[in-house]
Structures are given as C-alpha cells and as structure tokens.
Length: 231
Image (cartoon, rainbow, N blue to C red; front, side):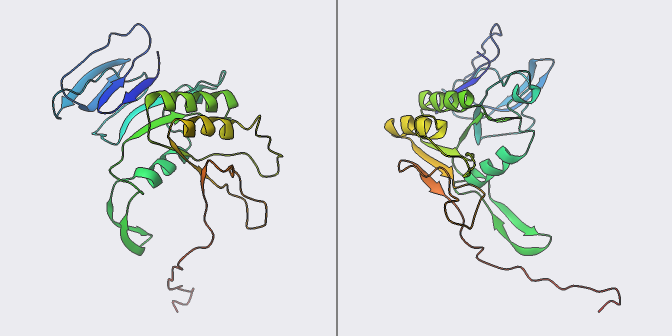
C-alpha cells in the first residue's frame, strides 16, 4: 500500500508494498528521506504510539505534529498526482485555514498587523490529495471512502464544480461522497465556490453539507501613497 492510514492516537503511515514496517514506542517527530530510505528519526512523545514508514517522496524535515498522515490518488501519467506534496499551493492554503498554527506579528506588507491562525490550531490533519492536473471523480470518491475508513471527525472539501454546469445528484461525486460520510457521523464542510455575487452562484449546496462562503470584506486597509514628487 502506497498510502498512509491514520487512526489517532495510533499512527500508521505505510510505505510502498515490500518495504519493511518499522514500529517504535514513541511518535516520530522528525523524519528525513534519502533514496527512498528513512535515515533519521527523533522521537519524543508518550509511549504506546505506533509509527510506520513515511510514503515515498514525502519528506518531513522538521517536526510536524499537525499532519499525521497523507494519501495521494494517481491520475494516469500525470507525475504531479503521484506524490502527496502540494505542487500548486491550494492545499497548503486551505489546510492552514482549517488548522494553521498561531503566528504572531502577521501582516499584509506591514498593514493589519496582528495574530494569524487557523480555525482549529490544535486539530490534527490527514491529507487526501485528489487534484493535480485534474480532479477525477474516481479519486474524489476514493478519498471520501478512505477518510470514512480512517475515522476522521470532520472533512473539509475545498473544491467543487462550476455553477454553469447543471448538477445531477446521481452523478455529483461530492454530493454522493459527502452523503456517505454524513451517514457515518462525519461533518462535511465544503466551499461555496469562487463565483458570485450574482444569484445561483453557490456550489456544494446539498442539505447535508455545511457550505461555507464569504459575503463581504469586513475591513479596509489604508496606506499612504507617495507620488513622484515625494508628496
């Protein structure tokens, strides 16, 4: 199995088929990888936590207690889909929104200085990478099934189809997958999409999904403009 399997507090991160499974009595908090071989591990956690090898091409170069596992779903010949690494930045952004650590002194080029954090910084994340060049329906449904099997508590799904497309609940993979998750007691939170503000521009609007979207920006950022004559 080339994917990770998470059931906290036991952590099971599996290697490709054929790789030896290594168990330790403490959580691995620092793992590096070289030539597909894990070469270092610093352990510091209560006894009794089971750890196995990290998937190929996934490198942890410093402590990561938030991300406790990851799966990827290969999409044909697209090499970008054959790794859990975020090559686009979208997954990192949405994961930070959900469970980003507290960052003091955050600002936008010196404006709006303050503290930034995700909605639930103490949460742990299991990542299911379904998109690379495309987001195939089979990958999305497989990710829902895996998340259910892994026993997650909340699913954050930051993707959706265009509102210009007529949706059919019998073929809408997010509606189908989320329905199965809700049947297992999992809260599914989806984005409302990037369209708007015109009517009928919300996606992921089936009643069993908690759909999240923005209405208005709640503040303005003011700055001085210096012209060519320094005025």
